[in-house]
Image (cartoon, rainbow, N blue to C red; front, side, top):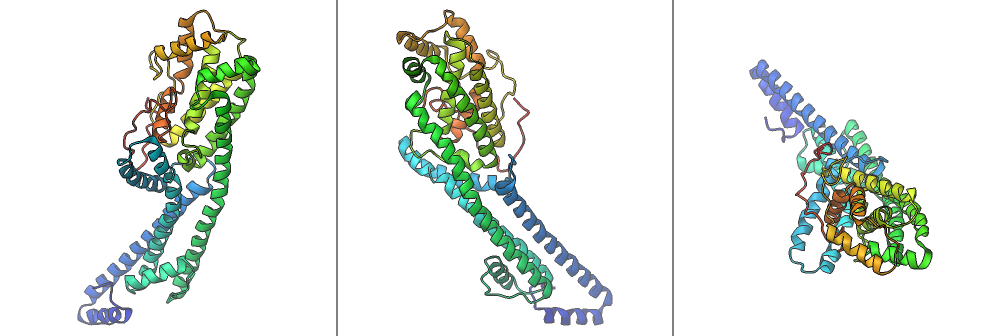
Length: 395
């Protein structure tokens, strides 16, 4: 039996089959009922999965990786990577990648609407035997509240009202989502811009320590550690509950939240390990807040890392020669340093190992600009799997 036939033709065929062979008629009728039930359940599953994806992305106030959102971002990144093959400079890549997160985010809405339309289309199809063309018109008209097509029955009318309501809710969610996201983006970028005043551009250890030593005194670093501890707590919350923020690039091409985080963490680590000043526990708290924030963001993107690293068992990407170069520059500018450089290096590596891997992985993921000890050595990420697999317990 052709399920694309009109109800009248199907009904006449069922009567004919029943008169010719009642058993065959009963079998065909049961098969058709089962087929329609399966199609209806498929539609419900598509709608439910789509709504769950929207809730995870827009509403749920915690890190909850979503397969559909992940798929959209990966597919869009694939096409952006194809375009990046024809670029030669970082500024060209930065201009292109500035559109990656906004386009991916906006494409989520038509993706969800298309799936909602397909899901309700399956339900409309299961309720009657009209053609798929009519089903498409009815579902599209209901979802977009166009009123160009009306449902033929009472149950399908109720479904069309539900579909229209869901469409309006999804649009409202996106509208409400954008101000919240840009508010978090503004808070993040304000601190990144202020860091240039103290740590130079690109930010690094030596300029920041030298400026505080010359202008404010090294004891004033305590205020910076308090401010950046709060900043790390803020990005941990915002960049896991609103993961698209990770890919939103700074207004200035040479700024990046990843390189700013790396510079602050490295300066705090160097302060505790190498500067000959009173031990500042606030610097240690800032480092801990920083590597926990970066790890939680890395967890969302399924980066495998060692949760309890130890140097020298776990190496770091900063070489001893790079550390010595910073030491010599600060010594030449009169910054008070500890006498044992060997112990200072071991202490610094012991702090750095807590965030080294996730820092350079995030720098590679976000295509961060070149910056000392972070954006100048990104690890080339492997192609991410389409579907999320949890490897976080593996070092």
